[in-house]
Length: 216
Image (tube, rainbow, N blue to C red):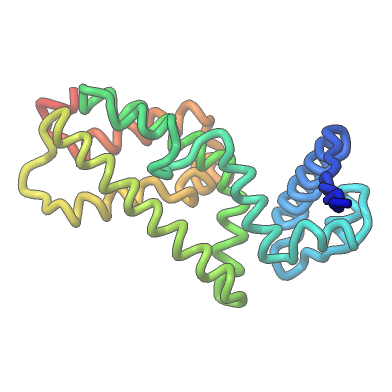
């Protein structure tokens, strides 16, 4: 008699998966809040667990401190990022007018700085003390530089970049301007409104990067 081979089925529960997703999001959101409030060194797994309303074991199931910080940073960037894979960023690069391209890019990066600024400050302060955070900061800065190069390339096609400024220098200037620290200093410390920062951000990019005829 031929033997019957039983197939083992994997049971999946959509409700359980949804609950796990929500728990993970709660832990990541709580981690981001604790890192901003306490700094990286001062943040503890116990504080994150208490803020999320879960156990220490649940928090560790999501990740250790460095992994939680990276996840919190990715979560803050969900509304848009300067990654080449981001649909909003690609849409901006396709704008055919250099002046409007830079205006849209300024609004886009101002919004990113608003969301990421607090965690970026924690990252900059803690990077020297943790190799994983050092790598994260280096990767973030390289992404900003690649973003600046991409915007300059698109603007060069769409209009006239300022003559006499080498492309590498222009990329460095734009990289400096889109640092989240600028938003933190002007909005957080000097009391500017988000709209005022956005307008300055755009005007400075246009004046720095475009020929005068293209800047107005």
